[in-house]
Image 1 (tube, rainbow, N blue to C red):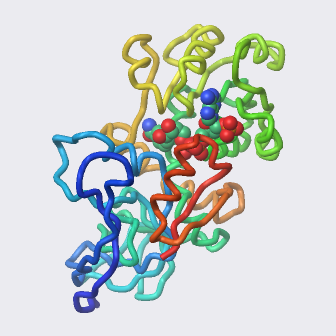
Image 2 (image 1 turned 60 degrees about the vertical axis):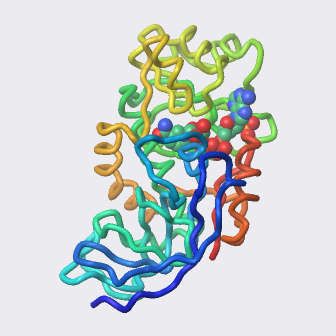
Image 3 (image 1 turned 135 degrees about the vertical axis):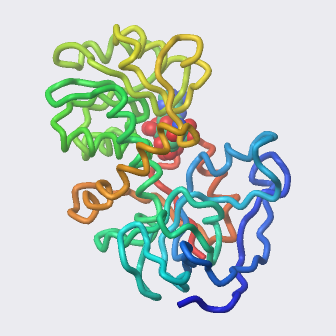
Length: 317
Ligand SMILES: NC(=O)c1ccc[n+]([C@@H]2O[C@H](COP(=O)([O-])OP(=O)(O)OC[C@H]3O[C@@H](n4cnc5c(N)ncnc54)[C@H](OP(=O)(O)O)[C@@H]3O)[C@@H](O)[C@H]2O)c1
């Protein structure tokens, strides 16, 4: 059953550039047509991609661009004969949505197949941040062929993607040597990783820490140092992946993945249900460092841009 048009607030990029170019505007939430649902947003996940994707001119996109790829909230309206990704749904059900547009909103209408029952074990700020980093982490492990018993190197182990990689690797019996600032070593250990600080001499320190060879390297940082250390430690370039240095992937023949690539999109769509089940069982958690009121999206991105947010951030309408 759908409801009438309602009014909501939403962040949109009205010109290309930093979050200073975003506007917090009123927008219409139309009654959802078949195959769509409306969600009253309780938390919007904050990801670097939200800002990166509108930072420079995009010929494939038209302004204004609604910001935000993932949310957690409750169903406020349902299109006729419509089921969500996880099955039947009622108004008031708690859900998460991922790979949507315009999640930085009080309410948003999205394709129903991108919506799933929210894991009851996670709070809304945690649930709103589960899938973008979770699916990215799963794909990094998959494309490098990381296997049980192997030791891998993870750049950015204390970051949002890194913490998800650590947990998914531990579940599969993969050992991880992970880079972080010393102040974040306990976070890396908490999820089963062996922490090592980044900076001069990184490859030597990793060699000293690892038991046996480094089978693969997963880069969630994108610095020259991260890629160089990966190349030094892993002979097979098809077992090195970056999510933040696409230029080095082109010049050095290592793998790069991104949600905008069709193969990545397919993989990430397929793995969503598995990650939600892991979260529901308590096997995958999402450490949230801080929440901000939705109106303070720019402040959240200023913290994210430091490169050391200390966990995930969420916006609360
Ligand atoms: N291609 C994709 O599909 C995809 C998907 C998701 C994210 N990403 C990208 O992946 C990157 C990480 O995302 P995230 O959400 O995990 O970010 P995040 O939570 O902000 O984590 C940043 C990580 O980088 C580390 N770091 C900061 N400066 C560093 C430096 N100079 N050298 C080495 N490590 C450094 C931080 O370590 P400490 O805080 O311990 O110092 C932390 O582990 C971002 O660039 C993001 O845009 C790409």
